[in-house]
Length: 200
Image (cartoon, rainbow, N blue to C red):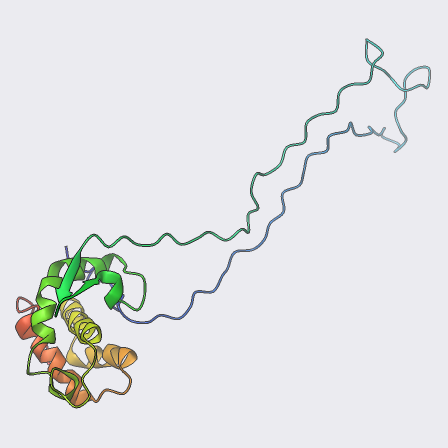
């Protein structure tokens, strides 16, 4: 499977923090004592003799056990970490999906990593990545080079063009020049995902 065609942005990109929309709710505790019954005129109802009624045994009834809601409804829920079943090696260092993504690896990123991860080392070591690549004056760390390569293929899989890729790549590497990033776009199609159609 590949990332969904309806997805507008690859999950590798940074996202704005989510706003907590949960609101605190209170659960009323049922009353444990007997309530007073009122008559139609609003006066208290009494027995024929005017005295309070008692139980058949003459003893006071045992109080009911109070029930609660268990846990508060507004308690935070810890996010479960995503497991990374696959790791790759780039120049002797192991990388999992979470090492390349700025967010938690969603389904689309995980599928892309599983599909193309083994080709990222060849991309990182390519000599066609300009100043940001191997031997360049502004070389990026291996993991960030691999991230841009994976991002390129995810955009291609979404039928996006190079303009869309540049917007996403600049979100990850704001200091990079468009001319340098376009080399990543072209080289990723040659090395990582040649099966995908390249759009200018």
